[in-house]
Structure formats: C-alpha cells, structure tokens
Length: 396
Ligand code: AMP
Image (tube, rainbow, N blue to C red):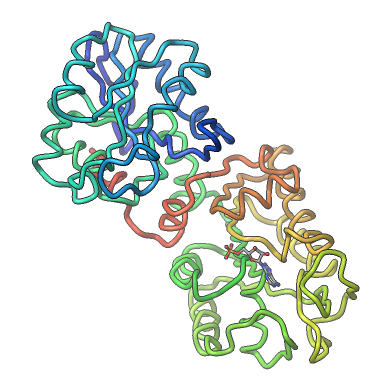
C-alpha cells in the first residue's frame, strides 16, 4: 500500500474539494511568462472535475504583508481557465463570506480559485482559527503542491489534519520519483552535486554521502574540496575556510563506502566572462592568476565512465559557470549523457533545484530525464534528508 492516500481512493462526486496548488508563477504586466506550474496541476483539476467534484483552489502568491492588490491571484483565474478549458471563478478572499458564497454557487465539476492565502497572517502561522475557516469550505483536502510542502502553513499542512487528505497527481508523481531516486533506489546510485558554494549545500552533502554509492562534486564547490587537499586553485571561487568541513565529508564518505569523484582536469580563464581566453589543465596546474570555470574533458570522460556503471542518478547543481560560454561544456556533456542513458532505459534520473533546471534545459536534456523537479526549496530540503511537513501530514 502506498504511504499516501491518492485521488484513486477519494469519493469526489458532489464533494467540495479544497486543493492546494502552486500558482506562484512568474508574471509580467499581468501575464504569465512561464506556465510550468499551471500545466502541472491540470491532471488533478481534470480528475476532480470529471469525477463530479467541486475544485476549490488554494494558493499563495509572492510574500505579501497583509492584503496587497499587487499580489492578487485574480489574473491567475483567466490563466488557468485558458489552459484547463473550463471556466475558473474567482473569490476575492480565501475565507469568510466572499469565499463561502462563491463555494455555495459552485456546481459539481466547477472550479473556483480563492484569493491569496497569504493575505491572512494565519496562513504562515498555521493558526487553528484560520485552518478552521478554510476547512469550513471543503469536505476533502488535496495537496498538489510539493514545492510548498517544506512549509508548515495552514493551506499546506494544517488542513491535512482537519479534513480527509489526499495527494494530488502532481504531488503523487513527485513523491514517486523521489522515492525511486533515494528512498528505495536501484543501486548503484550516483549523485552529482555542483554549484557555487559548499556552504549552501553542507546538509545536502552530508545526507547524500550516507545514502549514495558515488558522489560526483563539480562547480565552484569542487574547488573547495580540491584546495582542502592541497591543490592550488589560483583565484577560483573557493571557500578556503571550509577546508576542514570538506575533509570531514571526505572522511565520512570513506566510512560509509561512498566514492567521491572530483575533477581531474579543469577549464581555466583569467576573467569571469563569456568567451574569455581559456585553457584546459590538469587540476594541479592552475596558475595563480587563473580561475577554474568548468570541469575539463577528462573529467567528463571519467564521469561518463562512472555513469555507465550505475542505475540511478540524482543531480543538483552545474559543473561550471554554465551561463557563460564555453564554460557550460561539462554540464551540457554530462547532462546529455544522463539523458541518453535514461532514454535507453539503463538509468533512472532525477534532478532539481533552481539553477539545475535551467542548466539541464540549456543542455536540451531536461525533458529526457526521468523526472525534473521544479520545486526549488522543497526539493533541496528533501535532498538534505529533511521531513517535509506538507508531505508528512499526508502520510497514512
Ligand atoms: P548553485 O545555486 O549553488 O547551484 O550554484 C549555481 C551557480 O554556480 C551558477 O550560477 C554557476 O555559474 C556557478 N558556478 C558553477 N561553477 C562555478 C565555478 N567554477 N566558478 C564560479 N561559479 C560557478
């Protein structure tokens, strides 16, 4: 039996279904500029409405301090309508008379979006009276927003204790993908951790070292590991003060039997800018006035060789300064290798975290991974091994 109740187990006909969704989408001049998050909730909305439920959407937008017209969810009602192909009504408050009247007017199979939950202080405080005011509007609660599940707010956590609670389709596929990647993965498991700094990913590295078989470290954070082992990294981005921490992670890896893979060659330049004159050198030949901006071809070959021997890949962070050419080369090459192996059926691949999604899409590889999470903070907390309150509350 799955650890969570899903929509398969819900009797939806004629029920008022409060659905927590993520509509915190990028907007410009009242228009949605990236609708990934809207697309993600459509399967749940279709499921609920086609089975005769009344879909009542709860969401936040931005970080308002109280009611703030500039952070209203009103423009999202037509945006969801357009993509769902069903009219979405809007109520200008998420609790009280306006919300209650709008819910009462809703037909079976209808959809209603309620105003920004964060207009009320009780949302982020998970205040019992605010949870009750929300719970009054529904018979069932569905959480379809993994990206907000690391917050214990009224609409992300509190409601799950007040009403029969279910995981929505998007939440369900995210949890399934994550479970396959780290909780019960096919081994060996290889993790790629890149990005700028070790300091922002200490907990993540600590968790992964205990769970995966190989840990490939790339990006600026690899410089800190190299420097800690006595390698001269010139003027590279490097957290020299974290040398003891890096050495401790290496020690822990030895104890847990996790193989750490660091760059063996690097691409160096004197300036951090696109197309700066650059050269490829073994890691021990970086000049004092040079900085490491990418992993080199021998490192890419080494990582590809490791990939050929694993069954599961978890990825967060780029191998280099991928935003500026040609220092995207290692990220692009390894991302494509993971995507190819995934498509060939030899690998399960899960990736996530803000810059990672951009990096994989830049490589044209994101769509060919098994799963790419756009959840950002929640995905990182999951990689850190933390329990996510919104997910915990859905457990049986
Ligand atoms: P993060 O948010 O920690 O995943 O870091 C992503 C950022 O790390 C990207 O903006 C990259 O440009 C940057 N980055 C990766 N490798 C390097 C490097 N060797 N030197 C400087 N910045 C890097």
